[in-house]
Each structure stands twice: as C-alpha cells, then as structure tokens.
Image (cartoon, rainbow, N blue to C red; front, side, top):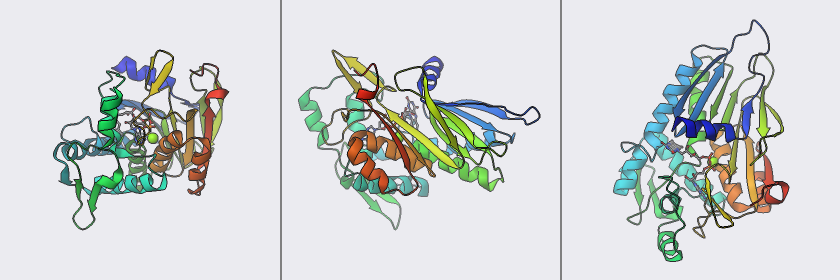
Length: 314
Ligand code: FAD
Ligand code: MG
C-alpha cells in the first residue's frame, strides 16, 4: 500500500520545488496517508500540519465511500440519510456542477466505478449488457435533497455516490479555512497531486513544477499564492487491455471511460473544490466544451494536454 501510494505520488504532475530557500527561514514538513493517497504539509508554522491532518481526517470520516461508518457509506447503504452540513453542502454543490457540466460531472457514477473495478482495484472490462443495466442508476437528478432538514434520498435502490472527484478539493478548502482561523498565513498542502498554496513562501509565491503526463520530464512551473491546482489524467488509475487504455474517469452518459482525446487537464482556482471538480468535468467534456465550461468560472485557469501532444499516446 505505502509503495503504491509513493509510486502514485511520484507519478503525479506536480512537485513542490525550492523547499527551503533562505538559510534561517525554517520550513516544517510532515506527511501522512489519508484519502487513499499521500498528504504532505509544508509550512513555516510548526503547528500547521496538525491542524491540516485533523481537518482532513474529519472530512474523510464524513465523505469517504471506503469508510463503512462515513455518511456517504451509510447513504449508499440505505438510500436515504439525514446528513451533516458538510455532506449536504458538497452533495448539493455536486448536483449544481452536474447541471453546469451538462452531466459530465456526476457523483452517481459510483456503481459504474465499482463495475469497472476501480474501487477494489480489480480492473474489469464489463460486458455491454452490464453497463447498460448500470446506466439506469446514473444521473444526479435521481438524488433528492431536502434543504429544511438535510435529508438526502436516492430515487432508485442500488444507486450510490462517489465523491472521489471533488472531496479532496473540499478537504483542502476546509483545512485552509482552519489554518486561516488559527492565524496561519503560509502553508502548502499536497494531497495526492492536488495542491493548495496558502499565502506565499517567505514573501514569494510557492513554486510548483508540472511534470509531463506519462513522462518523467517537467513541462513548466507554476507560481501560486492563495490558489489550488488539480490535475485529472488518464494515467493515474488505468488499465490497458489489448490496444486500449481504460481510465478511472468515466463518461456518465456512455458508462465507458471518457474518451475525449485529453490526457490531462490542470485547473487553477481559488477554491480546491472547484479545481478538483472542474478538472474531472473538463476531462470528460473534451477541449472545446471544457474551455467553454471553464469560462463560466471567473477565476479559473486551465491547461489541457491532448493525446496528439504526448509521445506514448496509447
Ligand atoms: P479526479 O479526476 O479528481 O477523480 C476521479 C475519480 O472520481 C474516479 O476515481 C472516480 O472515483 C470518480 N469519477 C469518475 N468519473 C467521474 C465523473 N464523470 N464524475 C464524477 N466523478 C467521477 N482511494 C483508495 O484507494 N482508498 C481509500 O481509502 C480512499 N479514500 C478516499 C477518501 C476520500 C474522502 C476521497 C475524496 C478519495 C479517496 N480515495 C481512496 C480515492 C483516491 O484518493 C482517488 O485517487 C481520488 O479520489 C481520485 O482523484 P484524482 O484527483 O486522481 O481524480
Ligand atoms: Mg477531480
């Protein structure tokens, strides 16, 4: 498990560079395995890591489909549940993003994610009939939200949700809120390649190196302050069968892995939630529709790499 996550992290696009510039300016670094990935905290404030880890744990305990006692797992089990404000907020936000992305971003893909073996990592090419059957359970319009008492209900039994494409970003936002409340003005959090840069590093922006997808070289640097950057790509979790590559980002309308000619999408935004969700949605939509979607979010910048721009483009 640790080795798999280490391999995962090193394959991620973003690497933090120039960790400690000035001699007498101390940076504290700590890391932990959380949310099925590697979480690293870098800050001149010694107490920052503890604040970040405890807030991410709080969010993970609510939203992880892998934790049987989480609200998401209980909702998936029973099909209806009164949930906490955090869970209600993120499911409502996900439903809005489903609308805005014309159904490309869809948290009800969970039964499809299971069917393709991306949950238990036993990758599997389903038969067409299995996919057709499972597609009946997909669509955020089948989630009923009661604003008055935070009750959530699924219209059909067998429906499930998976917040894998949005909750990491949300967890970063919550951790940054806690840091700000504690008066901490500078911290970098890297959660499995999704990064949040709070403030700058000793007065300068944090410097993040972008690694080329499927390769080992760096394609460039980002200088960020009070911004989050997230990347969705087809090389992080995928399997190859015959000549085809099947990645963990699925098209909720076809039931198959998204095939939009995109290899990776990097999104920069002030909110971790927006960066996380948009990178997945744009990956499904493809370049043109993806760019149009991004335009609807004022402070968002995107970088798309398509198959024709990478060497190994299987
Ligand atoms: P993103 O593009 O951000 O998300 C892709 C993921 O979103 C897919 O893996 C799938 O789950 C889902 N998805 C696929 N297609 C769509 C779509 N069209 N619309 C919406 N969602 C879609 N992994 C483990 O192995 N073990 C764990 O214990 C574990 N715990 C987790 C706890 C939390 C709270 C979260 C958020 C994730 C957890 N994960 C766990 C998943 C792991 O971290 C994933 O690698 C991660 O969620 C994928 O994010 P990404 O940025 O690579 O891809
Ligand atoms: Mg995402």
